[in-house]
Amino acid sequence: MVLPSTYADRNCSLARALEVVGERWTLLIVRDAFYGVRRFGDFATQLGIPRASLTSRLKALVEEGVLERDADGYQLTPKGVALWPTVRALMAWGDEFYSPAGVRRALLHDEDGGPLDAEGRCERCGSVVGVPDTRIQPGPGFQPTATNPDLVSQAMNQPRRLLDPIKL
Amino acid sequence: MVLPSTYADRNCSLARALEVVGERWTLLIVRDAFYGVRRFGDFATQLGIPRASLTSRLKALVEEGVLERDADGYQLTPKGVALWPTVRALMAWGDEFYSPAGVRRALLHDEDGGPLDAEGRCERCGSVVGVPDTRIQPGPGFQPTATNPDLVSQAMNQPRRLLDPIKL
DNA sequence: CCGTTCCGGTTCATTCACTGAACCAGACTG
DNA sequence: CAGTCTGGTTCAGTGAATGAACCGGAACGG
Image (cartoon, rainbow over the protein chains, first blue to last red):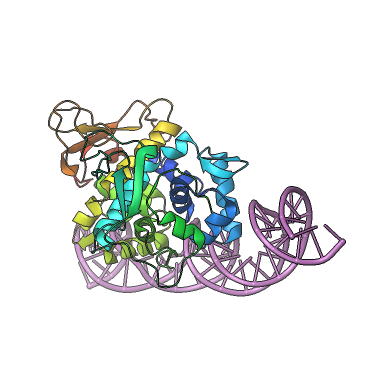
């Protein structure tokens, strides 16, 4: 089962979408890609995913056109970037019900620093903020890891714009 | 593994959310609950999920407070209803990239019949439409099944409001 | 009463995928 | 040319998903 293969209901776009991004790890890989992770080894260390699983997931995502591969590694295609509302909605749900101290990662409009509302609109200037103009940074619910984190995580925890490639 | 147990990154709300709704079938069960499915047997026949898997998923969702069980079966809690933006975003993504003929299920404001935009706002009256006021019905990309579908699917394919229990 | 059906499961053997550790090959580096 | 970094592949062990069969209580039906 490269993909979770045919869910029965052919009329459900949700089922179709889940065949692509519904497997364990897949959406976390996509999230890392939004954070600017590009290289195989960086995905592996940051997620703690077995390398064999990572290979299989990356291959599937490239075949589906969610990621594309170039000399620098893997990055999101427009189709992959279109998954942002999904990722944002799930993160918001997780923050709401599993992070009593507040959001772990805050989303801001990079140009004016205004916070984004639930629909991804800047509360300061009112415009709909595109993915590359979105800044992500630790929020009140952020918990610094006791053990010193790997370099990739350190880079990811700095305020940064989405899709900006991580340089080490 | 009742839940996909600890993804490494404790600072990611997405990982936390996926521990709850990230397993195969789980989000489809939640979707069916939005459609008004309540009974064990109805979930089983509509999804084609193995009954043992269904038992395990329903139990996990009840334990997590996403569903609650009563005499009529299972239904969404407020925490479960809060998953609607996630489900909507994934359905929209699936429609956009895997349904060339148009959306398979259209979302409308039940009161005035106006279509909903990407953020769940009624394009006719402009108000943000709550989940119980959302009507769902077959859209242009809907494909009637060749084989005659089960009664549950038949009921689900009629225009109906979300959360309205299915009566057979 | 007794038999039947419906419903919501459980049990169990099989299959399949995920895991983690080890291995490997090409590119670059000193 | 030896060593290391990167991006994998291989493989055995384990645990979860699958599907078919079984089960027990409640609600009919005669």
